[in-house]
Amino acid sequence: MAQSSDPDSRLHRTLRLISGAAAHLTAFAFTIYIAYVSQLGTSLFSWHPFLMSLAFSFFMTEAILVFSPDSSLLHSFSRKARVRAHWVLQLLSIFCATLGLGIIYYNKIVHGKPHFSTWHGLVGLLTVLWAMGQNAGGITLLYPKLVQRWTLSTRKLYHATSGLLGYLLGCTSLFLGMCSLWFSAHVTGTLWYICALCPLITGLVVMSQVSNAYLYRKRSQS
Image (cartoon, rainbow, N blue to C red; front, side, top):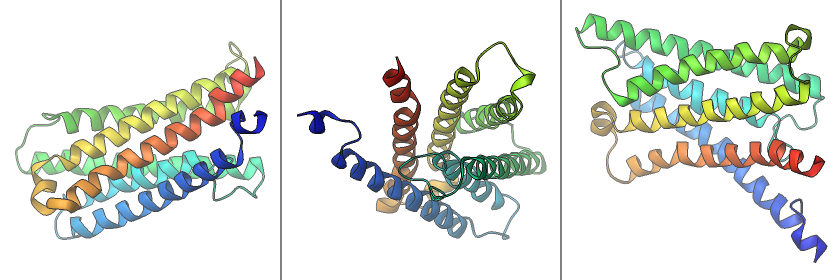
């Protein structure tokens, strides 16, 4: 009975391993497919969907899962090495997202179109700003003496929770982008639904992994 109720039982661990592998594969395949659909280099706009999917579907997914006890591709590395990998991936994500935002902003100026006039544009802007703030907050974990109001463990919990919310915002922005006229014109039928499932899959996996790594740990320590 004790073994069946243990959250770290073999069945639960196997399911987390499978879901983690699915998240890695989905993030990579989705980004590659968006690069193909965008036809990179054919127009300035073509870089926007690719950079945003690279930022939020690939780099950010990998940055979060690097700490997963079940799904990390760097599980055999030291904690210090995984922290560095997390920072590098997050900085790459911010760089791609900022560049993608700048490209679509300039592209709209060139074509005389209004800025942030859709839910996709508004949520996308909020996501980029949230990610910037999240990265700034992460500095307090690297240099704990900067903020001494909360304990390090409390700050880690806040950082993980805020990061999860930001990641889900990114998934929402990607989904809204797939509802745009441009994407709907290039991807139709079954392929559209498969693409729409991608941010849902990675979002659910990341939410489960973060909850298991932080929230369950808090309950077990209480």
